[in-house]
Amino acid sequence: MSERFRGVLERMTRIGGVRGALVVTADDGLVVADALMEGIRGNAVAALAANLMKRFNRVSNAATVGGLRFLHLQADGGTLIIVPAPTGVLVVTIGGPEMNVGLARLEMLRAIEVVE
Amino acid sequence: MSETRVVEAWTQKPLEDFVTETGARLTLIMTPAGQVLAQYGFTRAVDVMAAAALGAAIFSSTMEIARLLREREFEALSHQGARHGVFLGSFETRRGRLLALVVYGSDATLGLVQLFFEELVAGLAAASPEHVERRPVLAADFERELNQSLSSLFGR
Amino acid sequence: MVDDIEVMTAELVANPGSLIFLELGETLRRRGQLESAVRVALTGLEHYPSLLDAHDLYARILSDVGDHQRARQVWTQVLHGNRRHLGALKGLAFLCFWSGDADGALDHLETALAVNPADQSIVQALQTVRAMEPHSMADAPTPSAEPVFAGLDGAERGILLVDDRGRVLGGRLEGAEGADVSEHAAAYLAGAAQEATRTARMLDMGAWHWVVAESEAGNIHASAPAAGSLLLIVRDRGVPAGRLTMLAERAGHTARKWLDGQQL
Image (cartoon, rainbow over all chains, first blue to last red; front, side):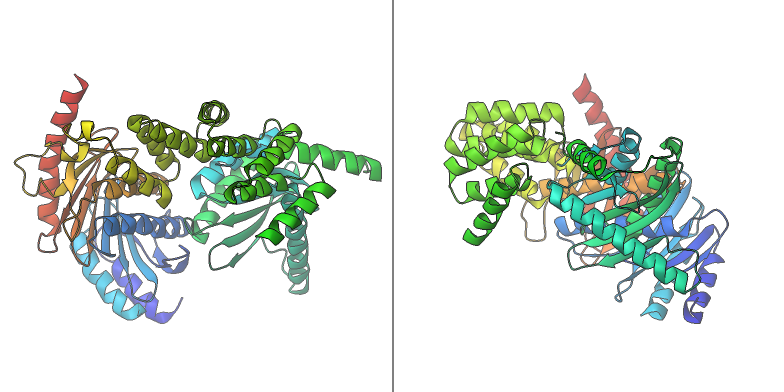
């Protein structure tokens, strides 16, 4: 894994509740780089996160508020956060329901600067 | 919306599930020799035959490349165009080695196709009957079997 | 185009069982050569009597020649074979609209949208049917004007209640320039919610509660307040995510009470 991705992804996994962090291609939903705990299927997170982002982008465009810059899915047993970078990749974090979303978001925005 | 057409019934459910989840435009399940077991989305027999033949040829070529590189095999390859993507994957079942040729549009992504290809493989592997040793095919038999397959694939 | 017809015709002559008849018949129909299109379709059906796409082609030609009754029969048969057949759903929607049955047209189009939420032609057809409903229906409250969220902040332009097939149940969503974008957003929300459900399930996250998303010009909050329903709240960028979630909880409570009332 590229060194520049390694550092940012590992920092993200140190945040409370985070079980995995990935850089994913937005168009194809493929993994560019990842740092995952056991049991997290990186290819599934990548594919589904990319698709989820596409679907909600259609909602936000239909509502005429423009393309998305941040998406947070909260579920019974988990949290998924997606932040797009201008370069056509997504930074994705997946974790438990108790995940510190605020901290994760800050790290993800820093990660965007690295992946650009 | 097109229908799923199958020659071998055990392929139907896994194929329908795959098409539903991915929104694939076209899908062929076939043997490496180009014999089609099931299809979704094709409306012309000539297209099915061409796609099957080309898919089998591509698989055969990549197997040769793998041999040169001393790899056991390449399990999947993909091509991305402006409006469509093509995915070709191979897998084992009790029925023998099979190929899946998938054409998808902008609604799907390669990642999604790959993700549900894994489920397709698992579904087909679970549903496939035991391998049956097939008798040698004579030229006359081949023509009749091909026509029967095409009829099944197009609901005739 | 002429060359295409010649090529396809030559192929069909050389191979009468070829499925090229589908493409040839449709091309002839679009060019208005209905007599030829009928011959091609009927000959094709002799070879493939159970091919639903062939029946769909025949029904489209019947509709073009004005035999709406027969077209309806054929499309209805197609739906018996495959209740998600997009051609039949769109065809029946057209026939309903043509005969003044806007409700019937909307039913078929909404089912078609559930089959393919990304089909823009269906979204536009829905808007067309709703925009051209007879004046006698003008006094009836449109679903998007149903005052489900009266009293809540932004009720008249930023809260939308939708069923899981993408149909507006209540509330209203206004776009950046004041236009009503309720139906457009509702159609895409259904597909997005299905994706959220699938994502949470496949990643072993359990049931999803809500999605909050920030965009260039606003923030959105999507949730499912009750089974079979979806709630979309849109606010400008000045409303932070936490406040949006609180508003969504209030709106969700209101939506559940209203939905319970509808079922009595």
